[in-house]
Image 1 (tube, helix red, strand yellow):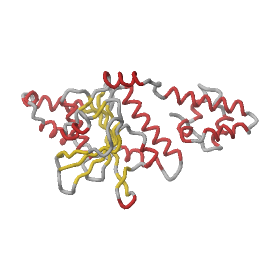
Image 2 (image 1 turned 120 degrees about the vertical axis):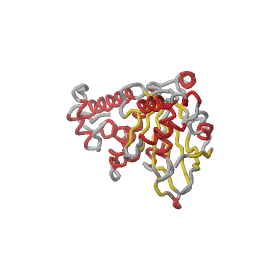
Image 3 (image 1 turned 90 degrees about the vertical axis):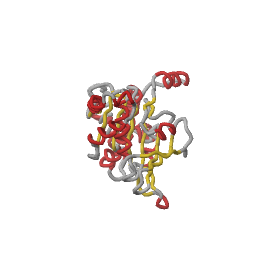
Image 4 (image 1 turned 180 degrees about the vertical axis):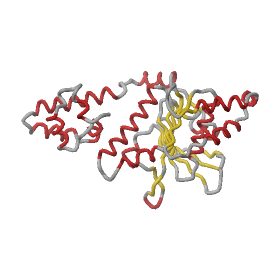
Length: 296
């Protein structure tokens, strides 16, 4: 989404007068409208000499937002899309795949939450390797914390014991590595952002609304990519201290409703046994959990 000033050429109603009115209420971009009390804004507009034109401008911004959102779908259309177009990508971890009824679902934004050293990056690397090796498609891996390891990916590929892969191991490793890209030039099946909190936290800044608006906009963009391009999106998020010292996901309440699926990953210090539990899922009960083994 864009600053209001950049829309004036295409939408003359969003002129300097409208921009000044919005700026007086700390609204500088389309994102700010998502977080603002729009009934209150309309009431303020009524008090202005150019109230009708201001209300037309508000309506125009609403139309811009509507055009950016996916169209409304009824229940049967959602079910058909779910059954026919959204496939499941195996993570390569048997316990996790059983917990999630197959793995990561295309069309959904899945958030993996966990404290430092819980195995989030290892999980992402092995999932990327599994998707690439099993010929499910390309993987785009966005590394925001300088933790990507091509050597670990190659190692995970080499550990897959399917007889069909063993016969041509070196060729498969080369193909898998070429399928895990650092940019989206081709259609992909899996997009990984490790980590979303490292990407977003620097722009949040204090208690201002603009940082939160950018965060929600980033989440919306990831969900839009997942839905429109039939790809699974996996993001990692760290934890912060909660009530009573219990760790909770970072990025706060505003981000909480963004992901379709939220998973919590934990691991005892020095152990390679991890626990994955469901914090939020559109079709599964929260609290369900499974153990699995991850390589140290």
